[in-house]
Length: 382
Image (tube, rainbow, N blue to C red):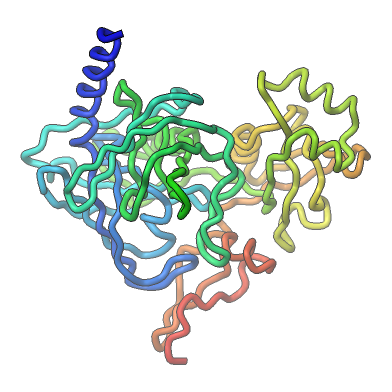
């Protein structure tokens, strides 16, 4: 037993010696209120995921939805400017870029991103840099199917994804911290904690890997850095929730349907996706209703958010077939998949201090309005 403990401790020592130099403090200033963000300054954490291209991963709410001026400080106190290159319209991750040549004195390596390594019971460490003071917080991944946290009723919230729950103390500034295993691989991204006790919410990295690979594909072989990256993101403007089989039965799911779903689903599947809410005038409006149980998409049985989102992202601008059950009645609907970026504002009008832009999908969900209406992010003096 002593030998095993010694080897484990040595594994962690080696892993942390590689990971810590790649973790940075991010100072971000939003000069204008925009969408779900307010004007002001904040500090958070990020980590290098591509050293040669200079790409840092952090949270969406750190990059922010609008204009941002930011700097990264490495552990040796080298400070460099960073530039927002992508923020996901829905999920809580985004990327900054920097000039790798600007780091002159620090030896560091990128942190591998490996979502497949996350498993229930996995021992992990959250690496948090707070004003250049490194905190290493141990934890254990307790759940991989936690409902996405609801941070605020009128601000940024993630949805249509599972989160990972762990017992690991978090505090302000730890947003964007890597959650690593004993091999020094990032298995999740810290997103938030609760106010009671110490459960933390970690974002799974499956969609992060897809986005990172697409950003790499945008990079010119000669080394030019894109100002932004287009990542195909589809939407039906529907919020789904994962409900247990006992709940779907109460909604009228037929026994033969449940039997067929259980037969082909991954081992341990406990439920199905159910429509929770829809945005008015969206692709699914008047076609789906709250309480509809999703059975198939394009003929494929879908019980997981990741599978659903992959199919939708691959179908931007095209039609997708959904098989659902509504109160025990099988239905088939054909919907045209919208472009998520087209309902995510990227410009604003400023008049006498007022900031005005189209109503985003994020806020349309909160208010129950259709996307694209006039939204006043800052009233100014008008």
